[in-house]
Length: 368
Ligand SMILES: *[C@@H]1O[C@H](CO)[C@@H](O)[C@H](O)[C@H]1NC(C)=O
Ligand SMILES: *[C@@H]1O[C@H](CO)[C@@H](O)[C@H](O)[C@H]1NC(C)=O
Image (cartoon, rainbow, N blue to C red; front, side):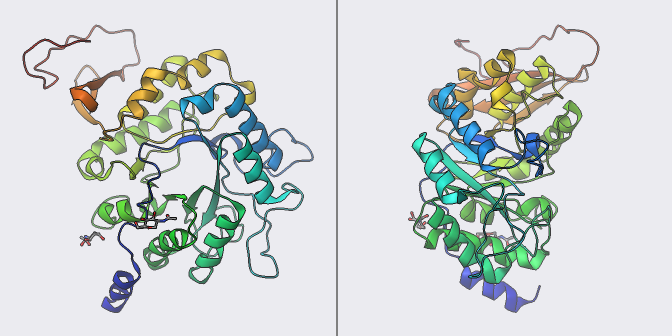
């Protein structure tokens, strides 16, 4: 990157173009990807394919089964919603067979249920799954299209873009969304494509242009995948923990609770850890067929209240014991704390002793 490019970026970046009052606490909702992927086969798999019916079904469940009242408000479309070609005016359009009513109508439906609609696009020539991407010259058009449709949230991925396009494109999209006048949450997948850490990633800048960002790899439906992500986030907590705050969140990716890969205890662990991490609580499961145990974990009010704590401080890992017990801590409003004890053992239940001083608390009396 030449100094000329850097100059261009400086000139094109508004300060805090994400500062529109949204995502003061981590966003909550539902996203299609982890559970439904790029299933476009509505002929043989009409229940599960990426179609307007799927998103309407999930909006119905969020509105009718107690989710919306708990804060789960965004219904988010991921990849594979688009037609392979733009319309004659160069605008993105949905696949006509799978979204026959169009996104505007879907947004109206989602809004009528008291919810908000998220959508997906990619910096570069193609989306991750090969649908039309958003090159630099298309950014304004696509931002305006989403605003015209009544979209409330954009996940902007970047599989098929290079580092320079990303450096220019993410700030430009932030500015373009702002310029539409429609408040939209902006989720950036930028850091994962440039190595996730400083100096390649400038977390101060991300906090100014994005409401949340995907630091690291996609979660898959397994405890191994969850632990891989968990370890990355807490190994690098000194870099990423200070970046979070109201309006700016690290995103370790979706909740996989309710799917096939986690036991009930592992599901509780994800909910507890994601709450300590001030992570967006974006479910990706089939809400039409969720069992009651998984539902109880995802609707746990204590965990949700911790996650949504208005102080907005991301938690940290305090201890990693030789016994493979780990301790995580998050400060909350009113001098409260949330603490998670996590066993990484694979044998049997284990008795763990702790103390105020071991957890870094002063002597005194505390309510637990
Ligand atoms: C645009 O950015 C300004 C400055 O941060 C902010 O006050 C305003 O609310 C933003 N507007 C939208 C629609 O995001
Ligand atoms: C990171 O971005 C901030 C905000 O745009 C800027 O002030 C700072 O100089 C950048 N840091 C580096 C190391 O480039």
